[in-house]
Amino acid sequence: MVDFETISVMEAVEHIKARRAECRGRLEENNRLVMELIRLGRLKEAKKLIDEGGSRHYALFAKAEEYEKAGNLEAAVGCYWENIYVNGADASANYKRLMNLLHRIDCCEGELKVAEIYLNFSDRFEADEIASRISELRRMTASV
Image 1: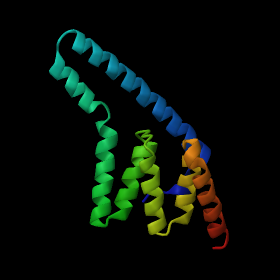
Image 2 (image 1 turned 90 degrees about the vertical axis):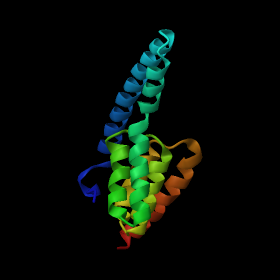
Image 3 (image 1 turned 180 degrees about the vertical axis):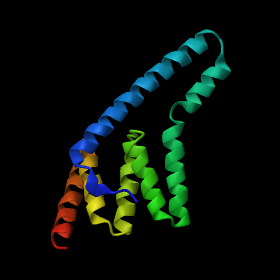
Image 4 (image 1 turned 45 degrees about the vertical axis):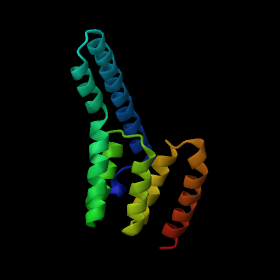
């Protein structure tokens, strides 16, 4: 299980931002290579690079879903967190699934920390909902 007590929200946010920047750099380089391969008529190689471009994020998300379906919620939590923290995945589904699982396994502190991190990356449409959830979780953890 992920130890959410050992990392601050701001440390996590900065780490995730750095990972995302690194991923964007790799994606831009990948796109440059794809365009060059297409220009050279090497379409199969270009398709392979396209397919591999985001596969790490998607593969880990799929693995987390499999763990969830099998009832191994702690392993699923680990996969979603790895996708966010290590891979810099920016799909909101990673955060939402992770918060949902932490809620299901009664890990309010972890759910609160993930929500606070997610608030830094959410769009304006989700921000109010996340802020409301954060307030609710703070009340819940204060009363424990």
